[in-house]
Image (cartoon, rainbow, N blue to C red; front, side, top):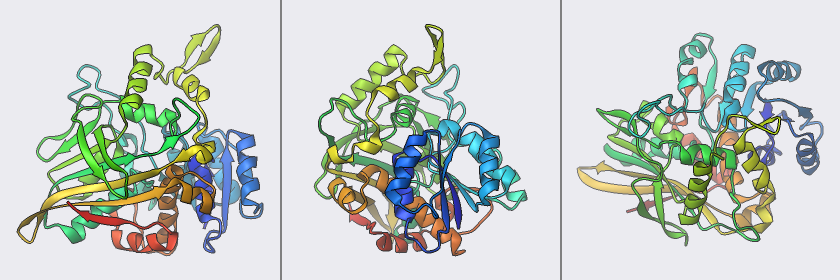
Length: 401
């Protein structure tokens, strides 16, 4: 398999690290706008034959298309912020190869009633083109990271094996990670964090469909496993809510994130000051997006691993009926930052995200997963994926609740 990896930030690097010694991976083209970052990652991997370096502008569809043609790739892996999804997605379609991302095309709030009605939903751009992909015999797998991605696989596994009827599927994410030496340092892309946390969260209910609510609404305390403990979680916009109901029969789907009071306070301040805006403004004759300024002022998550301590948990809580009795389970994966740094040289959050697309690559390469159109992770059989997790040093747990 030959892969064009667009984006070699923290997650892109981790993807390359996970795939580095896989014999079925012939080549991964490391492509990024930041030439120094490409060189840094390539030097760590130390396999110039397998990991060629390239400069790319992810927002330029023609450049992405030309790069895919140059290397005759089988798959384009989108590992950049989702503002670039449309150009990469369209380039893969025009070139004629498999496409994969870890976050879907962006939403736009409803113009007059943003906290009750959906405007443009996450992934709408991609799903509107699903028939075109299907007619052309091409496959796009969207939302194949950890959340979305692994969480969706867990939902499919629960529906297949653990429940006869499902009342609610709720993705719950929490951690006790600390970044020492910084008053505020997100462990993931701040651009993406602002997007998902400040947009109106989406909820899905059977008979009602998708609707929105206020950011940080419906707080609940969720008990996370492996020593992380109880954390308050709140509603956040996330792809799982847009994906799961398309393939899994259930009554309700939610996503709640354990952000913490301080993190929410900072995000609310950014919103109040307009620093969450992704549209460029004129600053002394220079057009610049406020959100890009915020990102530039914060440390790069890819270089925080040695300052991070603790664990992060991604998982899917499912409530329903099995054999006529009520049941609740939490299917989860926990990553310890110290272990990730020692074994793989990357921090826990990016490693936990990166393993999933590589497992999906392997299942596609072997023909175990296949299809056409625009599909989410839950559209595939979850069993081969979950069987592979142990081979990738990526164990999961199931907790009865």
